[in-house]
Image (tube, rainbow, N blue to C red; front, top):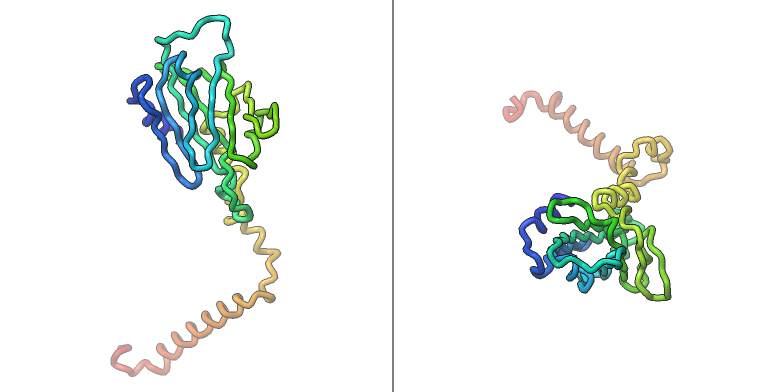
Length: 205
């Protein structure tokens, strides 16, 4: 995911329109701006994604219109691997702000994130008013790679390969178990009949 966003923003010029990719389980926004224009920008991928706005923490000095800020935003559906909750909640977000050399600028900015109504704020952000934006003073927790790891860690994918759960399976109470046994027995019986009783058939020989 990080390589995708890096390649998307790599060849964008300052103040080019934002490039957006929308899918059911994640949205991506990339754009190259300067230090002044980023504070006037509102990033919105639509499609259930939150709105993003950024502010420089150090307002004691004027912004530098020559300083490049590359914006990479990803909104993950936190229920992507949750079969018991099919609601789309794209509140697991990845934020990476970088200079022209690829150095992180996350520490220099705070963010206001406005999720879709009814969707909770991302972790490490706070709500100042009801239905208001989530205020995120520390962007260090929003590394895209880490957020993807959180998504997988919170999923139930591990249960697919949970062989220990088989020892607690009361198979004798399962109707499908007896169907499978019947299929296996019929297959074995057919093989025995073909290899013994039908040995003299030309088609077998």
